Length: 207
Image (cartoon, one colour):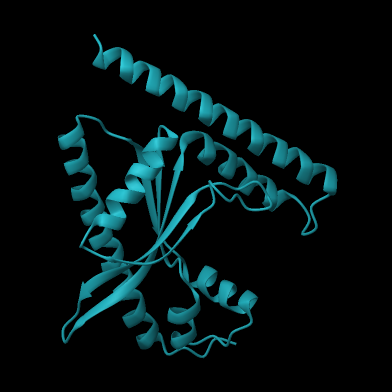
């Protein structure tokens, strides 16, 4: 049961809105600077979102926690979500390095699902960052999740997400196998495209 005071909810959500705005601006600066210094833009596109009230409360319920502000801030780590989609595998790790080396925010934790994919076949690089938000009385660090992946990984994840909604909770074993096979094929494509990218780079450098 949700007994959260509407005013408390509004105040909490405002912090996350501020964090989203600040993170958008900070990432824009970092990536523009990288593009200027390297004469290359590794980003295909960036998407961001603020989790809805219903999604936040549903996730808290699934985790088995009472619905209150304290549990939301402690146990829901992706209220602010960013997805950075890159062209090549090397771009993913370059962007991870850019973010980790920034003094703008703190890294809370990271998960390399490219080196260690999930059982479903999901691959991506996740960074949870703490964004400094200047409030009236103090600076508060607000958590946000950044997912960094290639176009190929994003293609698989998007279609897998759509399929999950249509499938029963227990996915049939043969479908699990097929999804894993598709994920493996995506990895091969990423490796081939990375190889082609490196060949082209060398060709340009030696021209």
